[in-house]
Image (tube, rainbow, N blue to C red; front, side, top):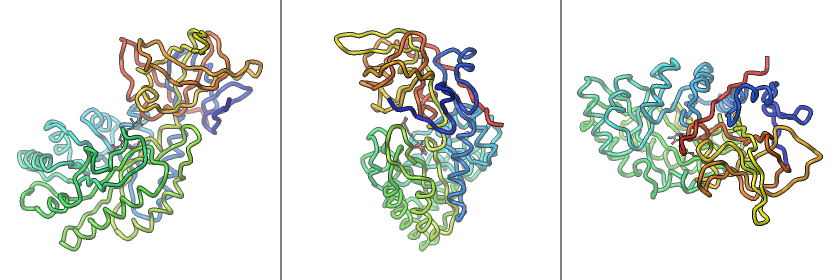
Length: 400
Ligand code: LLP
């Protein structure tokens, strides 16, 4: 089998470490299942993306939804990142961490009145509107508070991001955003929305996008809208190109921050305005792993099963997207043979699996397995299904 080895999760004498801390030492206290994150990973990825775009005026807004642990949010806040939130709960987390409200943007296709009120009261940097009805409501709420809401319209550019259909958001058939023609009309109806200041234009075409082309073509489409509005005297300050940068889970060929910048800077430079990014997964996926312990192994009808103590309620990505997460032993034993097995959890559903037909070191009860690339959309999508406890999270700061 292959072993995923990085600067952040490394084998040392065949034993997996996070930074320079032995996982086995952590597991003695935490038990399993447990999420373990490398602090340095978050910091390095943020700096990498930030410096790739240093040529243009930009702000990174960490997409809190990918990993909303308060300590993780704080790492980004401390580095000067803005935050992209998608609900009242995420906004409250952002405020709790102490991020100033002019560094928070609020996304979401279905914000409630109370969420909009909270966003307007806090005078967030930008509230994104995804429908005409939402604009009307934002305007009414801002009027009742005697305030002006700073708003950007999320435009649906109708571009295929070539990703899993569940996480594709920029096609005309998706529920997100407002089509180009309607958006232009709404931007120009300033008199209808007296308590709204249009500050930006926004897009988010999908997640786990592994090539730069969909970004480039969506940005080109939205640039046309941006300039058309400018010619009508509507000068927007911000161009928000959303999140979606893909990462390596298996053997995907993805693009680097440098390649991303190289492809986009020429288009973005022409806008001559501040550019926003909302990455989640890129900053958090490979910062984290989920560690499980083997409960039982069995051979049923010639099929091997490794039954572990982590389940679909802890990490649901394999069950709902058929997502691949590499699984490797915390302790490599070169005397063990490799087998093909399903790695499954204790939940009472056949959809409860972490891997299917996986080539993996033969395991026995008590062994620890690390489910890799679990820092994004892992813990945040965990549930108490089957009245199981949700796993603890450990943040490792192991490099001095
Ligand atoms: N901005 C907006 C408006 C979004 O909806 C999202 C993600 C992001 C930014 C961050 O996207 P990222 O950079 O992480 O791709 N649960 C799925 C992913 C859903 C993504 C939802 N929106 C998964 O596990 O793959």
